[in-house]
Image 1 (spheres, one colour):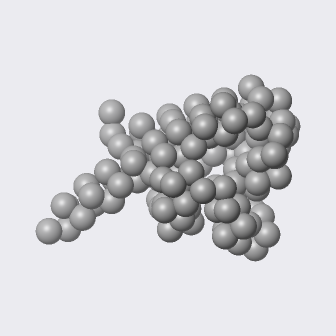
Image 2: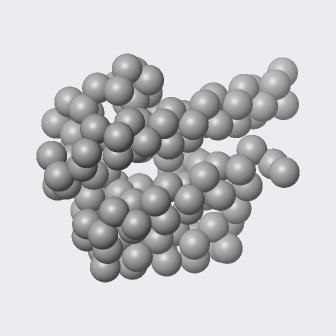
Image 3: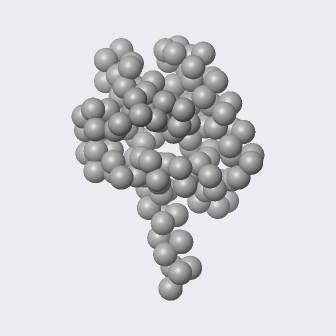
Length: 127
């Protein structure tokens, strides 16, 4: 399985986990459906969008720093499919249990590690 396929699977699993929390389920479901459509259109698009818009906040994620939600310019990116997820997380962060928050950080860290691998693979191809 390719890195981008693994990334896509993990991202969709992440959405499924968040839907199970029953917070903003309708918005999550709608956003997940858009993510699935993007994946079908171009299997590398999701990881590339994540790298472009979220990877720059890698240090927040690897340090499980919830001030990430104050740092990302979410309001300016309302229609961006990746930012929709972060808007949902920001709006509901205080409603999540500590276990749920830890699981969210785990998913985000896995996505970051997959981005690291993807970037490394791209860089090796360009040598």
